[in-house]
Length: 363
Image (cartoon, rainbow, N blue to C red; front, side):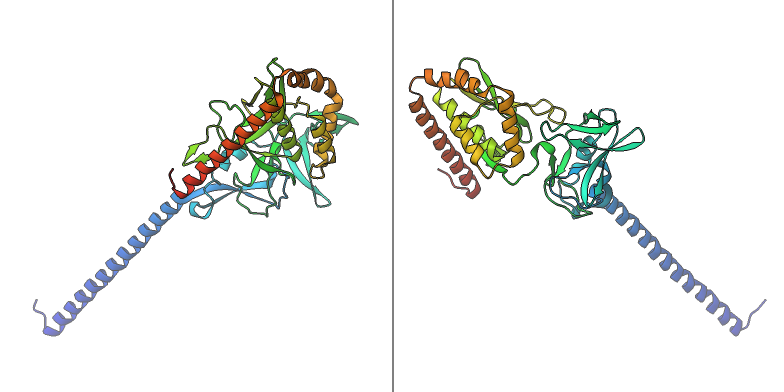
């Protein structure tokens, strides 16, 4: 049937309108699809860039034990956290504080003072620590019941606020709690184990030619300095209290005066599970007097030293084993001067090599 021009025009206009609407709809759909794809891609990128870190769920003071209830996990962008934060996941999990029976340790506050509690038999017992032995215990049925923890507790190196991301620089094992008299010392006089690496825990020992072997300082974490990216062969760094510095100095002098004496370090096989050894070395009378008068030595360290010397016959050990070796050694004072000068020379050489590596100078 023939159509008039007006009907044709109307139909063409309708078809044109429909085509335009379809084109607009296609553009809109295409734009939405692109937006969804971009959003999905961005979401995938954000997921790939996200990491789980542990953050504090409460304020923590320096030296405070970190227990399971004091942190929580948070998913954040990898670029917004320190690189060493992600490694803490395993550290925190491995050092979750429990006793040997699997009972958890938590922290509560009494008069704004952080107090440890042990969850045992559906009750909470205050977890206390003996000053003399540093052993943990609870009081149950009017009896003191000792508690053996599954790991060395983690403690805060510094005071931190709630939501602080926990990093390896902010926490440490309780053996190395930061005290006012702690100093970083460098030594190049000790024989080192072949496989010693930064982060290992060691005892510092003195062996006399007669075979007598003394523990001078126990369970310290060591750092191996690097020169031009290469570990030093003979130098180590260690954080020591004032009394430990004086004890090591006394042992070094004794070793230098005795031909054949050996200063060396021994590694702990599993530092997290092993208790610190009890030092057996007895300092000289002069060093003991200095320690007793030194105002920089914290009271607990002073108490530990007094207890150690009360438990063993220190004068017999000093006179019969150490002084006897020194007195029988030929040219003891000359040996001391020679070895001390050699140590100073080695320190200067190592220092120069380190500075040369920093500034790119060559000999």
